[in-house]
View 1 (cartoon, rainbow, N blue to C red):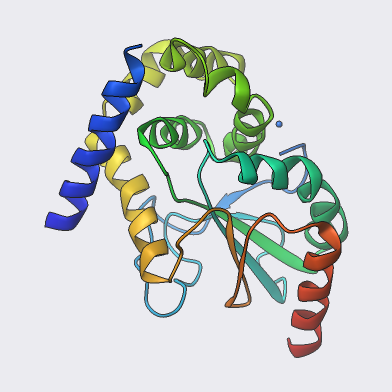
View 2 (cartoon, rainbow, N blue to C red):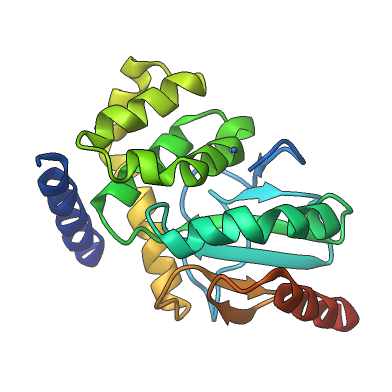
Length: 219
């Protein structure tokens, strides 16, 4: 608990200092349980409460991604690899996907809260919108105002956005997700676990295809 509070204090401090100077339609994300971030119980925490699952719940392959919404490499994966991966593996029911927050800075934490503030069916569209427009809001002179505009476009009223951003419980869930990643050995973003096997970096689709094909043979 003390570690969570210390990390939260650090990230929020970075956020305050920094504020001064769309995944496309597909399977609907469904909460795996109550909105509490999962605790790591091994090399990588299995799908549990708080996870938003994209794809069929009984898909034999599980892809878990730890990413930061301000990470350029994560955005690159979103643009160049994710669409084909989703088409070939998620939409076909061969695999299910879970995005987990691993914020690298205070602004990434704030963006993650915005995505969590939306209804479950809007979670992944918000992740897509945030990555697609990363250079606009992440480098804005007023990033919080830019995030609020993205929220409005996605159906999150300004009052709800502000309430979510000020909610310590929402902030702690994002921090707890990062801590679960650290316990699983995540050191950089993006990091993926395919049926528990770790892959680091925004690899091209062909490399992911090989890893997924190997997982399919072993499932």
